[in-house]
Image 1: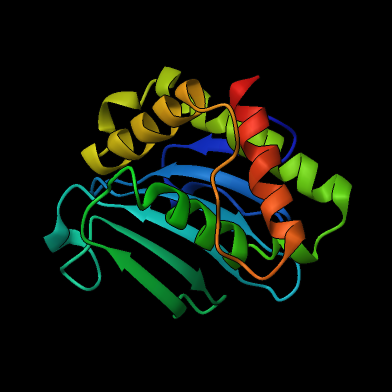
Image 2: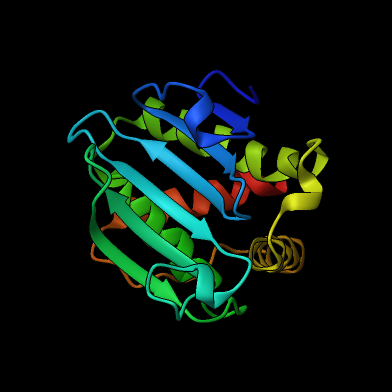
Length: 176
């Protein structure tokens, strides 16, 4: 457990997911998942990182953002064929949107962001770190470089001011 609501897990089937909690999960097939288990509606916001495009559900992506129902079906999905400096923030913003952060209370958002940012850093210290797929390593590298070299939060095209403030707060937590 990294924080009270975020954990690093070696096997997705080996634990019970709690509401309003996040997980960084290593799976046996090499997929690395970032999962946030929402309270309402009872769904998961997910980012899946694959070792190769052939491993993804669409066979064309190294990364997919999804909303997954309790039945395990993907209600919404967006795939990325490559991880680039220009799409990292799109991936993050889609994940935050799929987690419904703009609808959450301020203290819930703070808990989410603090735990998520700390988990992204801690996963590289975990005993399973050698199993991280290249797509996640590149994703993390670009975020780390960007936060180190850029004084302001990225410009995100989204309708909500709250959403931009969420991204800014996430960047602040990463820099801390």
